[in-house]
Image (cartoon, rainbow, N blue to C red):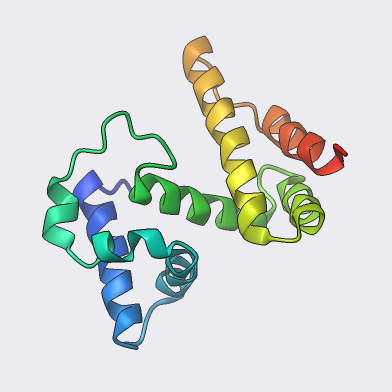
Length: 144
């Protein structure tokens, strides 16, 4: 199992941004990450300085305030959808994207559901419940 440190994750995203900015060849995961980075121009300057990014304290790690947590969640949701794990997440995110007219916006809403599932599991000291997570995304996709 791959278990990168916080510094590893930050250097990965900063490296991806450096490669993307200079049109260097990238691995598949880097190409995916670069796409999500492009969607967040508010963090481009921050991603340009890996040393400063590694040293920065993002406080409580709120998804919207920590570019590395946020981008990691985009990658996690992309991977979940690619393998449909938990079962049904691909369809739920696709429905939400269609409703919102934006995969990016659908991911942001899905992040809220994912974060809530993880917080609930942690507070109960139980494994995350993928069915509850998928149902939460589905509810957002079917609400008027």
